[in-house]
Image 1 (cartoon, rainbow, N blue to C red):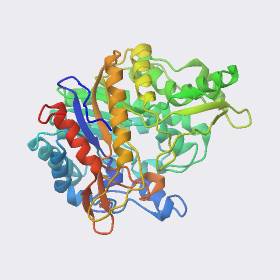
Image 2 (cartoon, rainbow, N blue to C red; image 1 turned 90 degrees about the vertical axis):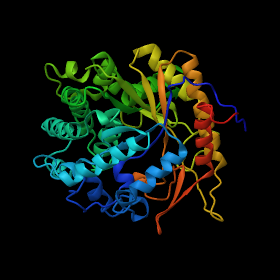
Image 3 (tube, rainbow, N blue to C red; image 1 turned 30 degrees about the vertical axis):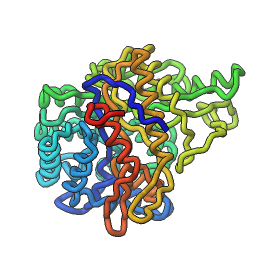
Image 4 (tube, rainbow, N blue to C red; image 1 turned 135 degrees about the horizontal axis):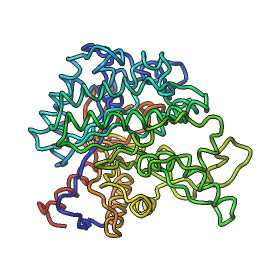
Length: 449
């Protein structure tokens, strides 16, 4: 395995990422209200192993230790999310100052360590009272999100280097409302396009108040983009890959960056297409300071008219998968970033999540994870190739700092650079953590290749 570090721009940002519900725990402390993930994870059969995020990594109490881990890694930035139910427990109304105090301290201590805070306002933990009122399919939720974004950005202001409004709205809309795999666990496909529209509308509406409160920060959004490749050269498979791309990627990229929904996807939704009112698309397409791109793998698509629209089935791949069954396909990262640059001329991009789960074992105080090191090395090289090809990529955030509550998969799947013993909450940096620290140090010229 090579140790030669590709030469990134001098101001390239190296970071790690987490999400509130996956690491914080303390779900009923200091005034935090219930979220849809508290409710969903308490539902029998919803989460592998019957796990919940009630304790998770206990980051709410161990945050200083976790910041020390980041400092030892040498990261430039930390991407974290803020828990809406910790800040406004009922979703609307009174602000819980104790909740804001937690993030206020976190931001200050990051800055003391020379680590730039990258905050995500919504990483899926919707306050349960808002879901009880209908959740994201209801247009009234837009005003609730804007009030929440106002409260956070007024308190944290320009101390936060970058704010993302939403993380992966596709997951919130489709996995949450159509497929039932994520909270709130509904299986009503007709709700998904409405939820997606309101997620995007909330994003665009909030940008104005966020910029007023934090004019020196960057403001953007984070999308998970899942490239689709046709299984064969058959026209039916090429068309299937195009349909999947529209359903998964263009439904979000096009309104954000071009001010329109893609006509082929709109037609595919038919009567379930959202209620788009005058001015909505202009609001959604407000200029971004950055676009966050989460990339993990691709889909190899074939047409299957026996399944619901977009009538696509994934073809099995031949390579060794990660522990969650995903193909390792680093060239997809290069091709995706170049495609975004070519087709959308986006604002500067950050790779806001990239990583892999493997069946890590703690042995004699060490976790040896060569597969993860290989995955990260290949994908970092893929980002470099995209930059060399003309993509404006400003940073890379490894997912994740810690092993954590991996949503519907519970605690069985480990993505972290740092191993977490969930019984004792002990943190053990893996070999990949040392590799990542070395990558950053070589980038800075602190050590030689």
